[in-house]
Image 1: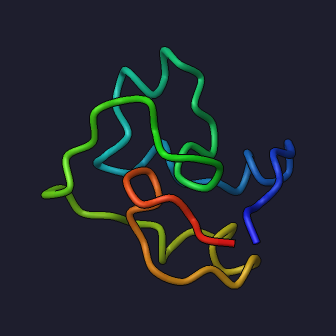
Image 2: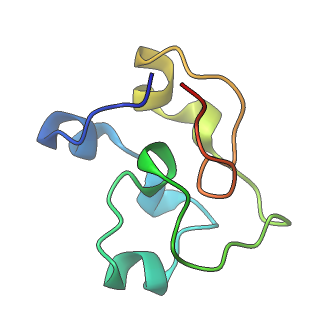
Length: 74
């Protein structure tokens, strides 16, 4: 199940520390960008994904990674 767009989740989210998160994501206000939909920004799959270390990831029993490139399957 995709995490909800809530302030609580935004506060826990570590997307801002992800090497894939960059100015385009900030400009598009893609908070929780990896958990809601594929990013509208160009993503570099060669960079390291940190989804597995995110509290939102663990609390929602997610698996896999690179959600900004490969959308979370529900």
